[in-house]
Length: 482
Image (tube, rainbow, N blue to C red):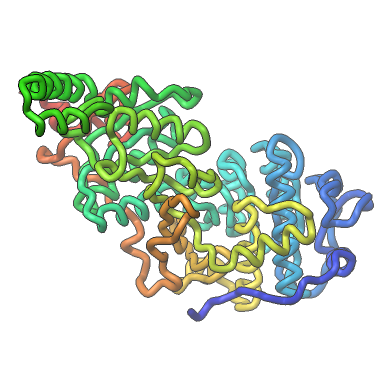
């Protein structure tokens, strides 16, 4: 790969890193820092009301780093800042200037931070974190011609020159659904929250299913605050009809067994704990949930006899830190993860300096700073052209690249949950050999031959509009009496 920026310098002592940062003026602040830059207590030293920095070196490449260093997202903001400083140390490029600005976890704070970053001649902006913050700064950054590399995972806020390092829902869903299809799975069900995240998952799933020759046959909605999935699982598995079938079969087998049929007696014994028989209507179930909610949901489906191998459970990257290896109902389940090729290096160094394990989110800040260094090294006047290089880049999170519409592509591995530990069963690409055109999913073909999924937990017409943008043709035909 032409563009590669993994740096493996030896760990420098904390005092040396602080000295480098302070001497180069990498951190702009209105007051004298009360603590070393890398200490957790340092967040109060950064705000958006900062003094002008007089750096006359024309070779310097200045990056405004917009992070929530105060407010509700301050913990994540501090972690991202810490990771960016580790990257800066590894890079050791005196011409790369990072200037930190506190968004205060609000759109208005982000707007002020962006204005200050632009006023202080930033060539590039890294951050902000939240979608509302990205929306707040996009108009001004586009007008000023300053590219943005944000961390938001909301695809709707992205546009030309406003990119994200974040792992997008569409890419995750497409990766895991495509893998399931390659393993022979044909009918996909979705259990999703009734909110924007659920709709994003559903939109991606129906597009990926069509691309891969699958069909989305069942969609179940639940309220985001809900933790009881018994009713929705019962509906989605067609329990009433399937239970009636097993009751009839058990009665028939019992009559034969009572008459001395040994084979019937054996068959009856195997059905002792079976709650339903017959077609479920799906062989794959995607659940973008995590923690206790996820195990509760899957347990309810298993209770209604929808479990592996008849049903393959799929997830998103939120499953990664769930520790589900001891959950018998989740064995053999699949989910996508960012490549772990170099994650141990970053996690180890972060822990050694800050005495805590980093969130996977923080590694994106490391790669963003390394990308900024690559941009500065190329010295191109067209920064966006460098950012959207078709070859992409290789970082702590493996291969990744950006597209002109602001979206991205990561090297995603498929992981299988097993009792003795999660195992990578399908390795993502370590480099990109195409132009990326296949990465973007085509709109769903809602022709008259398109089979509408069964929808539970939400008005079917409202769900169709949320997912497809309009009622499906057959729904319109039914409403008009055709």
